[in-house]
Length: 287
Image (tube, rainbow, N blue to C red):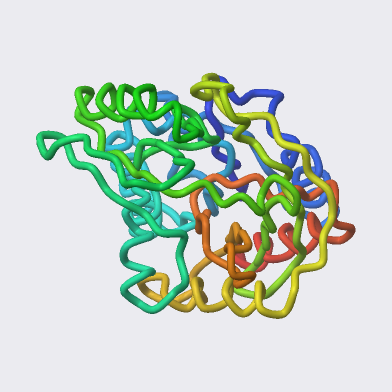
């Protein structure tokens, strides 16, 4: 039977992981087919496994996407699981992780109908709670608070929950550390350069361009990543893949920025053997 690699129509040819994964699957004797998640002509039950990858267009219709995932899971195996996708596609999961004791970047939540007052941080990041690829996200200095307030108000008027975080200044020099796990085990890590530039405005398009390079995570960064995975509902052993994005706080301690379990880039081309590790895990799930 064939494995489906679920993508978005607009992501065709843009997922840099895809050719590396497809080549590795062939080496592991797995037949794979790239399939658009919202294509009504596809019979998902004919696949041995559906692997969610570059489904980057789901945020405007998250309910449809989660409904699709649940329908797929009723007919065949899905990775990551549908309940994990439901939880992870709304960034309010960060509040769950904070309650579980995971060190998360401080976050304020604004709900539609609840006002748009912003915290008194020197630099702010404003973004919707349901988003991917930094779309509809922007960084604001203190002298740009009027623009930040207008951004939050526009999202709230569109009935979208808004999250506001202090901009972590260490990102400008050190970047982020994106730590990748396959089947709950550490695979590799990447340095992601700063995406949000001051005064650049709101990120538009399917995703923001990234400056990435290999990086070895510090022990405390790996420990934070493992603590975040341990707090995932149902446990980390169900996860085919995970990417944990970590930044360094002003006091030098690592903080969780995001826990990516739905459609993260895994930067397979930058880590030798990572595509084969993922392909091997997929092959094992089809047996």
